[in-house]
Image (cartoon, rainbow over all chains, first blue to last red):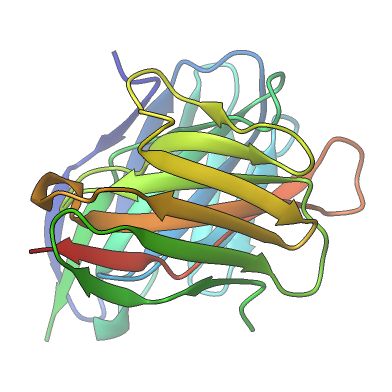
Length: 113
Length: 119
């Protein structure tokens, strides 16, 4: 079973609307949790990074939350833009093991005008 | 700007030939780099951990004789796909961890990826 599960797998939203992406993980103990944005044919680009003691982190229109007790994280996109169309990947770093990463399969977001 | 680069960004090669992909950390040193493979609409899959000055560590199921990794310096790791076959066609991505200044905290920077097509 994958250690990082993301939902929904894909979604389509209207430009200007908000959306929330979910990430559930089983990695324990963990060092940090990151959200990345990956455009098609590109490498992932970091949006937020949170340690276990942080509950929320914002980066412009992106706001990530983390509940280390329930092992859940979310990424909220506010006032979506066409350029937000991408795959959003939740990545959890194992506390031990040379920065080993556990990847979710990503949330595929398509923003339509 | 980008802190991890990859070269080439795209490569097309014939079946049976070898292809080398470079991964560079641009403004920091990386004793460890990671190589991933990503198929369409799939997550990144870790192939191996590249260690400067020592042998790479391969994930289960990854043939080390087929995917040769050399971490020649603190800023360069190379992945060579030997005797490439069409099933090796994929998107190859590297990453390098960089300390954030906080204890035990690293930011993982990914390269832009290399699209390999084997004909």
